[in-house]
Length: 76
Ligand code: FES
Image (tube, rainbow, N blue to C red; front, side, top):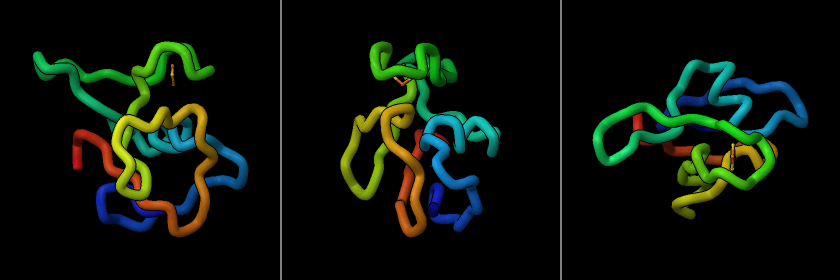
């Protein structure tokens, strides 16, 4: 997986949201600048939104990380 332009290794089967948490990367920021991150882990809260392979507002908790996937967070 490539996060904000940097290639990283993640465990097989882990979600994008979990991978970002392991890497200590904040998925997104609120308009106020407050850091936001996964809350429900099951696709309901939308707090884990990131850009995946150019598609914005993907819920990271609902997508499994895979090799070659490009993820962009608000930190990137
Ligand atoms: S953590 Fe709630 S939608 Fe992903």
